[in-house]
Amino acid sequence: MNSSFERWHIVQQFLFHEARLLDERRWDDWLNLYEDDAEYWMPYEWGQKSATDHVSLFFEDKTLLRMRIDRLKNDLSPLEWPPARTNRHLSNVQITEDTGDRVTATVYLAFVEYRREEQRWFSSRVTWSLHTEGDSFQIAAKRVDLLNCDQESGHLRFATPM
Image 1 (spheres, rainbow, N blue to C red):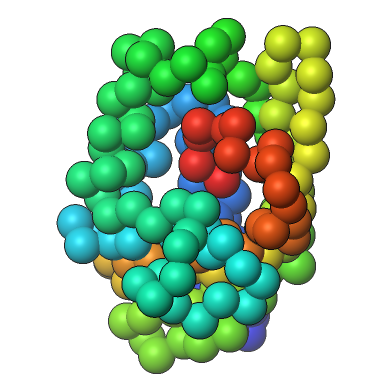
Image 2 (spheres, helix red, strand yellow; image 1 turned 30 degrees about the vertical axis):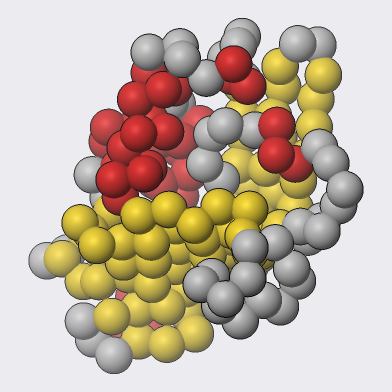
């Protein structure tokens, strides 16, 4: 079997696993996938180059992600009441860089949320920077480029990470 195909398959399975943890609301297991100095970023502008020189929809480190998870776990997020049911559909998984100990992967993500008798769809391109951890990975950074990032309203009503 081709080793690049095997690597792609392992990366794909890791990304599917992360999506499943989020859909199943297994917050602690999901957060454990992140390195201590990891960043989670959702730009406000399409093609935004930096999270630090322009406003972002989200720009969180692991501490801020943990705070968000604590609010979700303890029903302290008014945006998440009642709790949303979600499905994340990943497609077009590509490894764009692989140095052996670091992998950059991109996917297209369709995020579906159902809550309060309303179903909403979001589309995005997601890029992960992964650090090799034995036979698995740790997330060093995750960037979610929401297709409608500059929409006037609506997308900020979700409290769960994409």
